[in-house]
Amino acid sequence: MPEANNQFQSSEQAKEYHKIKNFLFVVNLLISIIILLIFLVFGLSIFLRAYLRMFFENRFLLNGVFLSIFYLIITMLSFPLDLFEGFILEHKFKLSKQKFLGWLKDYFKKFLITLFIALLIVECIYAFIGIFYSNWWVFAAFLWLIITVVFTKIFPLIILPLFFKSRPLDDNDLKERLDKLAKKFNFRLSDMLILELSKKTIKANAMVTGIGRSKRIYLSDTLLADFTYDEIETVVAHELAHNRNKDIYKHILVSFVISIFSFYICDLVLSRSIHYFGYIAKDDIANLPLFSLLILFVSFIILPFQNSFSRYLEKNADEDSIRTTGNPKGFISMISKLGYKNLADFSPSRIVEFFLYDHPPISKRISLAKQYLKE
Image 1 (cartoon, rainbow, N blue to C red):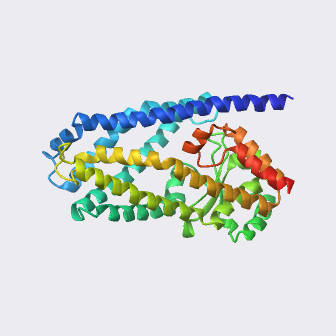
Image 2 (image 1 turned 120 degrees about the horizontal axis):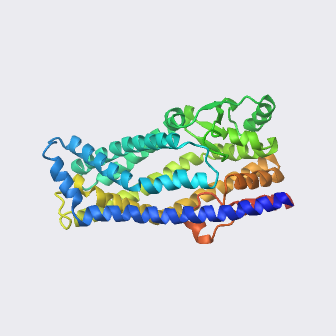
Image 3 (image 1 turned 60 degrees about the vertical axis):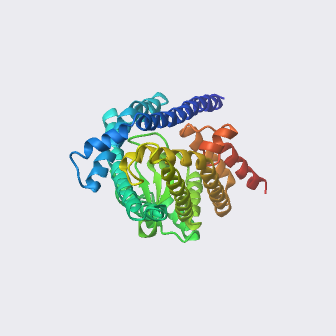
């Protein structure tokens, strides 16, 4: 009975936690729109570009400095909300174990990585606009594809180690069991690593990442500490199913298609609005706030459909996991425990699921496993 009460309390906390998270998503979106509109309406980007031209004649340097200042301003204005959501809220609900300086260090790393990628993308896109004035969006989409593939490949080798340490699986009994499972999916157990999350969070997680020789499956040390072998096996089977189904490549392809559509919309709007806003041409870096606003708008419109596709792939991976392990009870136990541990909302509203969930809600994943249990 006390256990049931604790689970009920956890469910109520989860509702409150996700209610705040969903509210912050809307607030963050509105703040981003307001900042970009201020740059547009008051001509701040034109003023900044004109000011920087007094110091930088080279367009490459001008664009890079402009973007750096622009991104720094947005980051500074967004920092209070990021601090609340990423640090204060996680500690309030006892999900985070990270000290403030540690969180700030990770935040700074993310800032630098994002800025580096943004500089690469923006410099290339505005160069494409200058060279291929009418068809730049085609080249920009292929650039996005290349960067996505490269980033996916280097993520487990370079990016992830900046934030978390990893180590080989050292539990021999579990290793033997997972080795048999991996062979069913034609996967090498040597590419399965333990991710040390416990120093920063109590959450448990698993993921497949990388492509080619950088392909890895990560299990968090919090998962190994709190879950049974049966439960861990179903988690691993889910990730192995993603690998066998080549879901990473499907996500990359969908991202490529979305980038074509997004950049084409940007070209249409920029072509018709450059003189209205006082820009020199389509490759004028001063139109970056408008460009960003358009990308934000298109991304928001496409987000529900992108998440629906992701939920479809996740459902397939769940089914593969249950069928391969033949253990729907273990899957139900695993997904329930994972939900309580990560403070998940088991049954969100349909509109929240439609817009924000890239995985099926836990209640639906349990229902799926129960169908197999009946069979």
